[in-house]
Image (tube, rainbow, N blue to C red; front, side, top):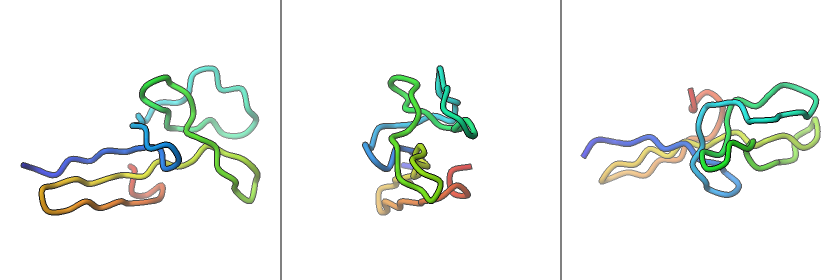
Length: 76
């Protein structure tokens, strides 16, 4: 079995896709990721600039390894 990469929301754990959210009207840059189930932005987190959608985490699953990678560079 080969490794499988699964990005998800770090707050709720739902699977995510690299698609901008539908109907995004909040000021600032449009997020690049959405919840796969409903197309909404990832769950909010507090940042120095205020509340923003979380960045996804990537889970690398293989028979012998579960690795969680956090951060923008790991999700590209």
